[in-house]
Length: 207
Image 1 (cartoon, rainbow, N blue to C red):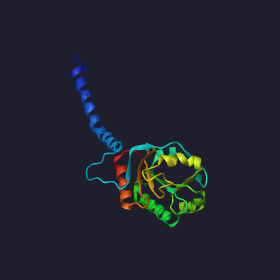
Image 2: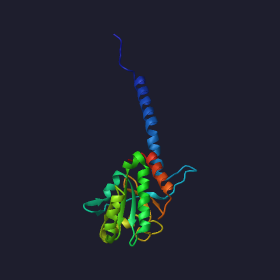
Image 3: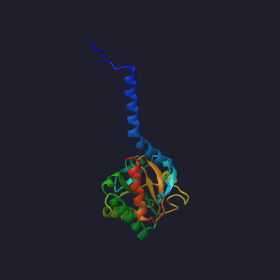
Image 4: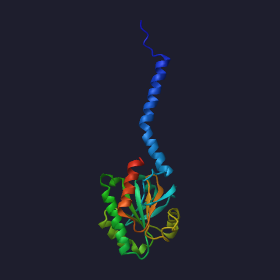
């Protein structure tokens, strides 16, 4: 009778082939994640925003969602989030920024479902106006909170120019892991912001 049991050499060779196949298939994923978290960018690749290095994990905070319900920072974990803190006494300029964020979101096409827009009202007096804008800019979420609830979030989003209350009008980008990882000046370049977000979505492997 012929012995059909594989030899130790054959088993070892099969295992080596399996490991090599896994390396081939997984290396692009591992490389993309490593590049994303290292903050490294190839020569000639420019970003429009200001990178936060390393990305900053956001604290767990619960805010009031307008017109009802609540919002927790755990919801950052589901999508790429463009965050805008509505300054006090802001009208025309704020409208233009919210309109721009809406256009960026729409321009993502099939990837739009992977992103969301969040407006944090620092002054409750602006809630009525923001609720009306949320109808015009479909999908925009509006939240607010008492100063004590907002303070940890303001601290977490602090950059060189100050916290969002001091550096009013900046736009902040949070990744699907809940990390604050990039910010933009009050009047960012539309194409630059759109390009940054599109590149991050395509290479980060985070959904």
